[in-house]
Structures are given as C-alpha cells and as structure tokens.
Length: 363
Image 1: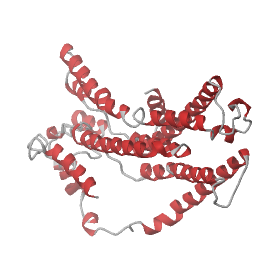
Image 2: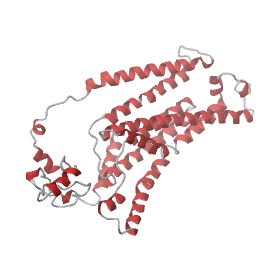
Image 3: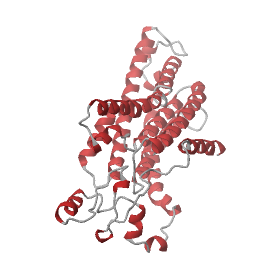
Image 4: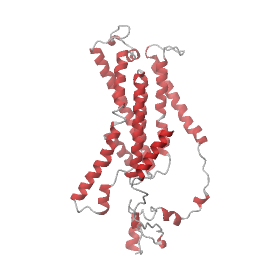
C-alpha cells in the first residue's frame, strides 16, 4: 500500500497534461519498485535458507557440508537449497501475491470507503451537494493492474529455476487467480468506477516493454538449467552467470527492436473516416456532455455572472449530466431529459460479466 501511494504521488507531482502519461509513469515506477522489492526479498530468503541449512548440517550429493561449497552456483543447485527456495517461492507467489491481495481489494478499496463515506455524510448534515457526492464515489480507474500482472509474471518465471514439482500447481493457481482478477475488473469498471477516458495507447505499449525482462528471464532459466545436460555446453562454477546475463541483455535489445520496428508494420493503418470527419461540434456535443465550455469553470462563471446568459453554461459534474441546459447561442447542445442512466434490466452488468467469462472459456 505504501508503494502504491508513493508511486502515485510521484506521478501526480510531475503534473502531466494528460492522464495517460501519468498512468504510464505510475505503471513503470510501480513495476520497477516491486521488482527491486522482490529481488531484495529473495536475497534475504537465500541467506536465511543458507543459514538454516548450515545449522542443520546438510550436505551435498557428494557428502560435502554446504558451508564448504565455495561456488555460489553449486551451493544454489544443492538439493536442500533448491527445495527450500522452491517452497518459499511457491508460497510467496500463490496465494500470497497473486490471489489474497485481489480478494481483499474490493473490500478495502470499494466497500469500506463507501460505507465510511455514507457514515460521514449521514453524521454531518452540513456536507451537501458535490462534496457529499465525492464521499460516495467509487475509486477512479487507474492502470496499476498492468504492473500487478507483470509482477505476477516475474514471480511465476522464478519458479523455473527450481524443481518442476511446483510448476503445474503454481500455474493452475495463477490461471484461477487471473481469471478472478479479470472478472473483478470487469465488474469494477461497470459498477464502481465513475468514469474513465484514456485517449492513447501509451500505457499498453510501455507494458509490453516492461514484459521484455520477463521473457528474458525464461531464456536465462533455459540456459541455466541446460548447463551440463548434454546441450553442447559445460560451464563449471559461476561461469554460467555472465553467460545468462549476456543472453538476457541480448534478448532485451532484440525484443525491443522487434517491438519498435517490426510490430508496427503489422498494425492497423490509419484509414480516413469521412463520416467522423464530417461531424460538426453540435452533433458531437449532443451525444457527449463534456465539452470545452461545460468543463471550464471560469467560462461557466463568466457565462452566469458577467454575460448573464439565460440559461447560462452549467459546469459538468460526473453523474450530473441531466442538469445541463441547452443554449445553442453559446454552444451548449447537450440535453438529458431522462436524468438517469438507461438500463435494460437490473442484472445487465452481471450478464455482461458472465458473457465475458463464457467467451474466455470458449477460446
């Protein structure tokens, strides 16, 4: 939670012009911070496991006490160390990282704030209008989920450095966890998030860049585990480490080059849309409440207090579109006669979630 808040504050402090840039910075900062945190945790776990094994006087396959093994690689690949680290890595990821936090997320971020906000508004009658609405609004949509998934992928890759007995159990658990995350996010966007608009693809593109090290880890693991296994190379001691690191950075360069130069060649081309190009401001504003006029508080005050427009330009608040009034002479064309969100039935959102789940199961 502290890391969430620190990364969010740093991203806000930059004061980007567009929210997409803020979310991109937040995603990168959070991913990097969590990665360093995971690496530090595993270094501490390694030394803790080593001290435990040393205290229990464990030996290698050849009967050498673990404390007498000078090579880091030989010590790391000993049976006792592999088993203890694999058990710790499995418990660290599932269910501690990829399931439990997401089970608690709807309670901590949605239900509890809503109940506390309702109590505050009920106990303080002086809180009215927009201020009261702000206490009852759900959390804004943010792109931190990219970082959450990338972190889970990094931790999932680490299990490949250890015995394969945990692999199937772990990845089945991860599949279940991410299916739950998808369903929760679907429900959250439809029922809790007030509104969200992301105008470009920056967050998604940078998340693909952040996934490059995850794929590089798989290559490192393949080289590490293939050593001395009859694949044409036999490296003694710690000499395998620089080979793995070199392969990682070579993969990063090649993968990044493909992402920058090759992938755009297969993307969709910008095709002129004559219908959209021919639309006037009036036609757009009739369907979209937010405009340059209705989202500019200074303009709204000028319209009401100085120019005395009748009706004046009303400021646009989320969920209050029905109070906007039409005045074509000042560029206000939006009208919502119903004053409420149209709904086919009370279970429409749940039906959309269930349809999405069935769509995934059919793939």
